[in-house]
Image 1 (cartoon, rainbow, N blue to C red):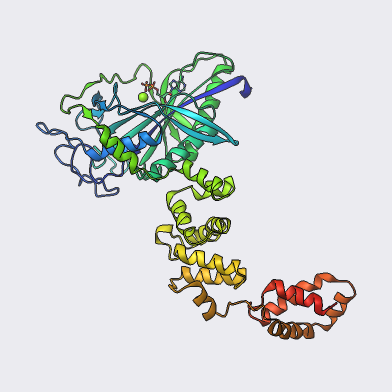
Image 2 (cartoon, rainbow, N blue to C red):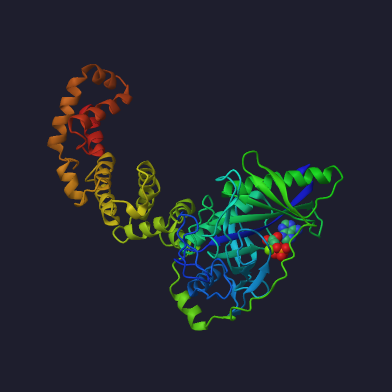
Length: 478
Ligand code: ADP
Ligand code: MG
């Protein structure tokens, strides 16, 4: 049934900006502050107050716009979006309507190894609203206006997305990008990134879009996908039963992936947009745009290209390394000291990641310095320590040891011996311990070799070089 239909999705993503202060006032924006402690007269919209634009908001919007290949409107305007709700003290939201700061651009996603460009219609600047709380008090709804006036960028896609997997990839990609650019912390659980999904379905081959439903209140990327899946199913069922889908706004409930109507089309807001009279047009000089361009960090796409083409890493390794900027930066730092790129990628994507997970630490606070990791790689490449020795050194560094890898290797007796006389002594002792096994080996049970090597490792406390040991045992038992 479902493959009769084509899914059409457009996403509206709100990103709270990492600025210290609000978009039109000097109030701080710290998350989790005591309710109503970050509210100046401007934020609560007292008569006689005037908004003043925070320059940093414009710069962050331009930065994101450049990264997404948007056209930057060097002259753009704020508009008033009028509606009445308790968390909106002025009775209107200052937003951008007809002339937003960025238009066009795209987000490139990869689903099932297929790259696809999702076109953007616009990115605009606006202020966030406050927050209602209906749980704290049995009789009253409480309002916290700390969030009112926190700067937002709204990123609106064209209805180009064709599956919930594409939507998942799109939000993941955008979150990665806003984090790389240090524009927004991308935390959907805390609501600093929010996504509304506009969903419709139509018969395959149909050229017109059908009515869309906007689903809100998903607090994770996974829930964006679940909400879309549920909405698609709901709409297909309606059409299959001969009904029509009404244009409306629904709220998603993560408990059972259901949704309920928030506003029907009849009750849709009439926002009566008009130009914000209290703010002058935003004029962005080309020198500012150039300056922002020149300070742009390397973006994940460019880094992936560099890692696969210049450093010969697999696409998978490159992708994992560019998942976040800290990891990519760490890799770049390690390869300042080693040209074994593959080993550096392996260490970071495996040992480093799992240790960070285990000790619940971020790369920012990680004790192992890039140079130290490169030294471990060198000792391994030179066969000076075994791989288990390398892990011991790594652990010592992670515990805060500040010396060089070779010093740790010496102190902990991890230097492998390929000195034949010394090795032979260990081997003879090992073989003497297992005369029966030696007999078996000589009679063809070659698998016993591992037992002997293991014993040599034990006797040498890991100092024996496994390769030379193996060769010597085979020779001795010939
Ligand atoms: P409005 O101005 O009413 O908010 P927009 O044109 O800004 O409407 O569209 C809002 C979002 O809805 C955009 O992301 C757009 O891509 C998406 N959208 C528009 N029409 C459809 C449709 N028929 N099906 C799915 N998404 C749609
Ligand atoms: Mg819209």
